[in-house]
Amino acid sequence: MIDVASYVEWPVTELGYEVKGREAEELLNLVTNPTNRDILRVLSVQKESYPAEIARSLGKADSAVVRRLRALENAGLVESRWASANGRPVKMYRLCKTLLHLHVSEPELRIEKEDARVHELVRNVYRRHAKNIVTPSDLEEALRGESIPELSKELDMDPELVDSLVEYAVYNLERVYSELLKTQLELMQCPSCGGLFNRDAGKRCETCRFLVCQRCIIDGTRKPVCTACAPK
Image (cartoon, rainbow, N blue to C red; front, side, top):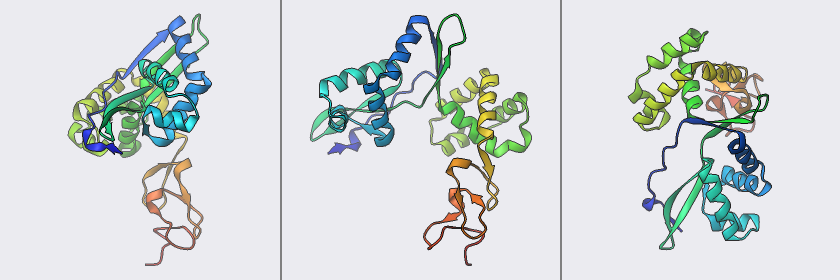
């Protein structure tokens, strides 16, 4: 049994950097390796796990999985912390919230690694100020106008991390805004509560047939209905 009380905090990684040439090729090979992809897939489902558990689920030797986990951790794709299992220390692994931007139409391969929490924060700010954000400058104004303590509480993140995420977003404003525009195409306004939600995460009310956010759908009935159509 894993002793949760023995956990230490997950480390805070760099918010963004890039690799080129040979380093980029090595990173690409690491990500596309079938066994590494299987390990990443296991962690995407289990959220966090230790090497022996991952090895069992893949039918691989513990030592082989440990070696690959170390390589993935060195590349910033997974992170680890110590826990206790049956009184013995074990390393728990989980995926880093990482985005990889691949640039192939250049003289040499270039990969940008970026903390996905940057975009999580930007989307959160956009949801509250969507009507006022139509340009990158509008987004910058909204980001700088946020209360770090309140945003930290809402995102369940350390205030210092939130402050760093805001500064990173402002410094990389054009790219962050471009990514936001892509997600806007997937966002819908809930007809029940008025909030924004991702189209893929919505649910359809069997009464009005509108697609609504998950907070406004009632699944306990025979047919899923939205809060607006539910019997009072």
